[in-house]
Image (cartoon, rainbow, N blue to C red; front, top):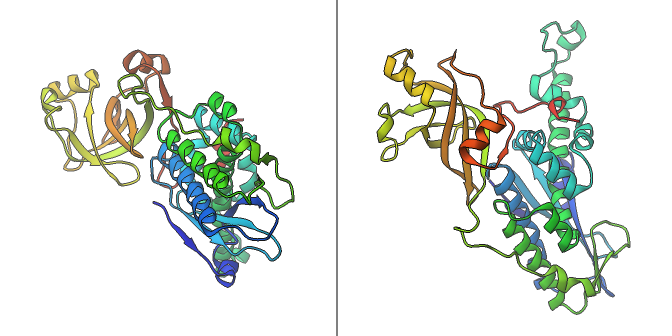
Length: 371
């Protein structure tokens, strides 16, 4: 879910300062203004880059807003506030995967552990709540208002840390050389759309002869000269769908079934229907042969609404998970059925894939991040 709007300086002070981050676009111009067309096109390009990151890495479920902040006197510095709401947990979960760790470090120059320490101990409070032991002190019990304020600050800090990751990834796409991005790998998911948005960003700068160079900090440093704009204004090369099949992504999730199909051979005409872990409708087929053996033996305790824990594969199409295939049913209504498949086993079934973290309703703790 996305947003794109403007803020007055007064409303910014209380609404966005605590839990957002800034994506800065500094135009090297002789005067302290640029054409409206340049401003709109470059801001829209930044918005499209973040949208592509969301669609590729966060399943299109990142709740974010991109806010145009008022410029400071005596400069032309586009300031876009990136605010991430409840989607902060999705950012942390992504960073906890091998593919997420690699992309974050490649685009931002910092490993996920660096971003994790930005929120620090506060994430445990956000995820688990204060005093999980239930043995709060008398002082805590006498100050519920202080505890609520602390939780609010913790939540803001977690959102701010995730916003910094997203805005820094977007900055990396705008700032890095084209060949650097090619080595990182910008063919996955909607990342070609991010490259197109980047191209449109620099085309807008080319069309405005007043823009001499570009920077992405508030300092008077402009590392990207105008002579570099054309090389950055190249659109992504897209292969035919048949030549470049969509990559599979694999995750482990708990789902509940709203409409089962107990006919194994009829799944192509009528798939299973349920709700995934973030309560979205999902359709899927179950390919786990061991599960179907249990079905035929009537060894499963079926309920009105069955709960499954599954290891499934899917493809991201237009920012949404599609073609879900349950490779292994791990649990059925709380009863353990099988161990998770190894990476090698999955690879023999679907080929190359990206492994995502396990999403949770309350989100992962930053302490789960791998060093």
